[in-house]
Length: 321
Image (tube, rainbow, N blue to C red; front, side, top):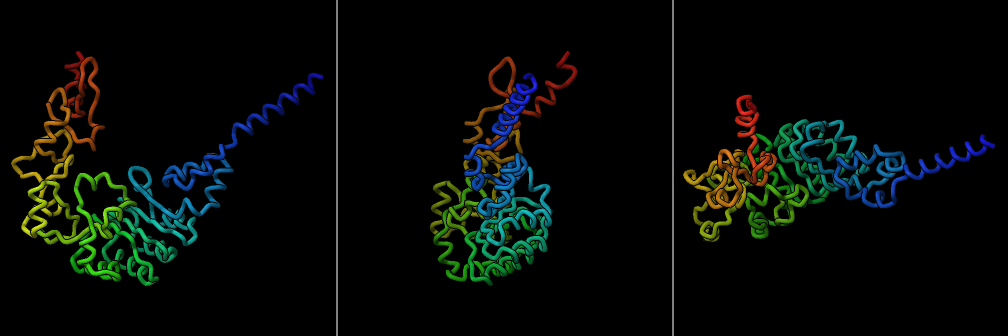
């Protein structure tokens, strides 16, 4: 009798464990919307989710690799393994600051996925201008135009390389028509812009020739009204790359060298934004909203202390004593 009860009890426990281990049906519906890192993690949860991730092509049609996890580990072989899950139907390939990706690795993915319409490889320092040109040329040969491309941060990009890229990208419209469609690019908005939504601001390519230094770089517009009027009337304004004119991290306006305010972080702040931001209780310096991780809560008082002052004063043996 005890043996029968024991068997029945064990059977109930096993059924409960199976029921508890089964993922909710909703999880299968959200797989197509998960970022790549979470998608890979989900495939390790259980067998049913692993099979669902493996068999469904839709989650793999848009590959977006961002900091700070996957981009430091992504190699040509890993990229090929991940993109192969799309079975040639890849639409978006966004590799943000993936330094280990080479021209050959990118080209192998392009050859297997001729339907790519978004190619974003900013900061991929392992790529060369010729490698990017070859990839774009391959995509254009399939009579499939790219909606957007990002190449900012790739070294040795010349005016000739840019003109060649524009030849492939603007086959159905003139360069003048393209410039008429694009919206102003503001520095502070760009920092918040998601990689795969680049074409939402009406731009196919992220770089152009800087009017001042003539280098192939990102050129930013200025939200100042006086600078807008100069640009509208084709006058010499501040529409340049960030190396030619400093811009405020918070508002994107141009900042004259004498008006740059000192901050905890290395970013540039204008006087107006400097006044509005909260300051460190010790050094009275602010930090932009991009670097709030430098703020350490001050116990026993309101406000915060920057990490520099915390390490310099509050972590020393003299203060502890």
